[in-house]
Image 1 (cartoon, rainbow, N blue to C red):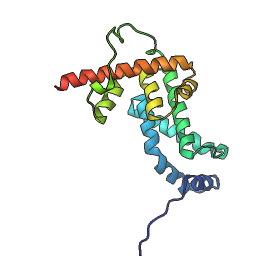
Image 2: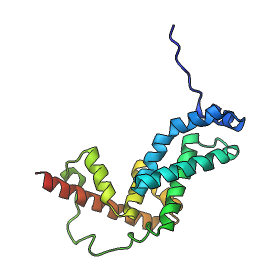
Image 3: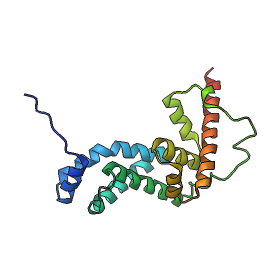
Length: 187
């Protein structure tokens, strides 16, 4: 006889939390903490900051569970809290937009790089992402990794859609330059 533990769905766990079941809190945390930490780390690029945001996001989410209406999944709702906390953190440190201004030194007048010209691995891309300025990394992370469309990124970052579109294009070119540079060093 196989005795496997069946973990309830997130919706059931949320209801159990609302009813005061402390075990349900731990199960929700265990289910979502790694993914939410990775989201925060991609945006903030500092482990300590990502850990702080993770704890704040779960604290806020658990305090606001009665406001969760189920219009989206619990994971999507929690991710939105994490993303907003990351954006707020970056704004407080004035890191978000300081590096999003056009800079002649960062984008030389070279022909655009094409993705198919570059060989890369996941680890190389992660390293290249970490080397990007905060604003570029944030736009790329929200759009590529977190799945927000550019209009949603603009709303989250409280900037215009054209700003996000421009920053996304510049960030992508900068990332490709970093990857191309890495490829040259590897040869």
